[in-house]
Image (cartoon, rainbow, N blue to C red; front, side):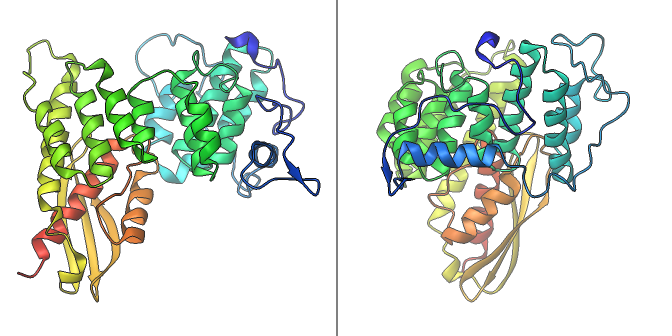
Amino acid sequence: MSSRIACCLAALFIGAATAEAQSKSTANGKPTPGSRAELDALVDRLGKTPPDWFKSTPLNYPQTLDLDWPKQPQGPWNNQKNVGQYLWDVINPNPGRWKEGVKLLHHLLTRHKDDPDKRERDLLTLARMYHNLLEDYGRSAFWFRAAGVEKDPVEYAQSAVVLAECYWRLGFEAEARRFLEKVPSGIAKAKLLGDMGDTDAAIAMALEDEDSQGYAWLAAGDACRQVGRFDEALKYYQKVLTIQVLAANPPGRLVKNRNRAEANVAAIKSFEFSDPSRVPNGTYKADSQGYEAPVEVAVTVKSGKIEAVKITQHREKQFYSAMTDTPRKIITKQSVKGVDTTSNATITSEAIINATAKALAAAQKP
């Protein structure tokens, strides 16, 4: 796997070639809009250009951090020593440090230039940080490509789904679908298909590998909910509630999924009463089950419009961009219906949507 990665980059932002040859589709010497060539040119340009915040962001990390980042950390959990644990515990839950974290990964790329295995991990981690934290889909795609994801979407299946999403978010849906066809089936791929509107394909794929933890039913319910097929969504969510919780349940996964299914059922039942045009001016609070604990939101309505959705209490840790992304989508749509959840933070995103629906429903005038 690691042999597919270039041993070094010519410079920090230069040197990772695009995964496939550019298309020859051009117009007046420029890539045709929406073409593969235009996508490649965009990704290449962004990837080789530092973000506007990069220079002013300090390279800040604990001096106790082991920048060699061994593949198998030794000893007990220590987020001041192990890079992966530092990213998980310190960077991810703190949006004010996300850019610092990205800069640290760029630094590690240079430090590990002679270690292909570590560089592979650096590249994939950096790509996911650009995607999950900063929603910088062009640079995320660049670094996924540098890691070889586009050349081998089977070997890098999980990352390949994220790369396909990057293409879609950048406005290249045809290229996203073309690439996604090469990626093996799975829950993550099913979710992306659902977000892209391929509801029946998403349901079929989600149910290919029904599991005892309820992930398949949840994914099928999410796909239906996304397009307003609420009766079907309820059916799938309720199936999760029929799965028996065994004493040997792996660390609470089924329990968490049951809690999530119950929250989704309650939210869908309140959707018909969540019309902001029937809500008096004011700010209304409600909460819904997140991953760690309930997520509380305050929804402000003015003149029949959703003016603001603010998260007022939560204990989520790996929420990525859900805290800003989901409220923005709700305000843009002026509805809780049809809002797609944030990738890799689905549960937190759903909790925000569900809590908003409950708040609007409770405040609605008879």
